[in-house]
Length: 306
Image (cartoon, rainbow, N blue to C red; front, top):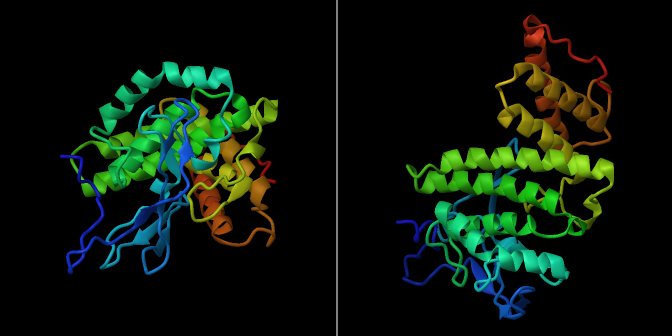
């Protein structure tokens, strides 16, 4: 029932429309020390028709008559078909310390079971479908949970969780009725947790963001540290807890001030033009309205906006 989700579409002449290819350069798994093939997405020929940029900085792509729907971000991670560990491609030759490798090996059975419960029948040795790509991201999310902080796993888990939420929303569009919309919300909350923990670790100097040169959050553009600050505010606004309203309002107030400091909002500034500035302004105004409406809850927002 799940195996054919977003498989590559056929074209009218009966030939398969190629979206990806197998690289001649093999990838060495740090756990089993065996090589496996790397699948990469082909570019050009109308495969990627850029569409809307969402408020979450997720780039959507318009389907084409020849290639159908494409999801470029599913090719950003790789997974060993033997060990079922997964990383961003550049981390396979980097993560080699014994403690991390031992932890990954010990967790293999549980890792496979956990991912299979949400993405059943996933494949790691064929051209990846949307479901396979989502499973690889989940494997990566779990794999980075076992490696040393020197590899900056927290921010990587934040990006992976956010992208997983996007992929689950896409899965819900393609195979509705399998609760992937609910799963997406769970990954959004994970993303918020890991983004907040990233900032905590950075301030405590226990984990450096410099290890991850591209903070995304999507694959089309690197919005850097500014994008990270924006995502924390947006995720808190959209997916933060609502049981304790005083705590929620306090966190929103903190997010508002962080956005104002980072983007010069509330004052005349053209130092950071582009879509991120505009979306940050929109978020700032939305949070401001929520805080203003909360006056009846005896909450007094800070006036330190810059």
